Figure (cartoon, rainbow, N blue to C red):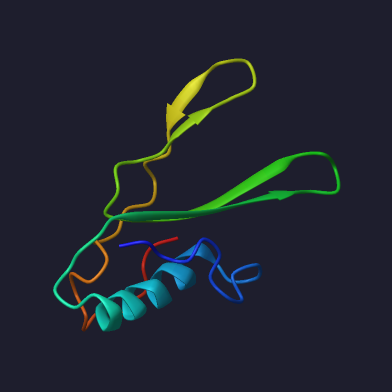
Length: 94
């Protein structure tokens, strides 16, 4: 499954909303298939800091590599694989 690289309207939506929409689309285009996905958006602040917003749908946690070489797994966002629970009423965790 190859999702669009940048879903329409993705610039302003929280990553969890984008994955929720992708979940609905994948069920329509690829019924019976499951997939993992991480959607992330990196934003620069006015003060020169960076903010990473991401949501995870069943994928292993991403590894953050900082400028100084320090690494850490970003494991604070977990969700179900895409197309696992079509009747989900609660949002994916941000």
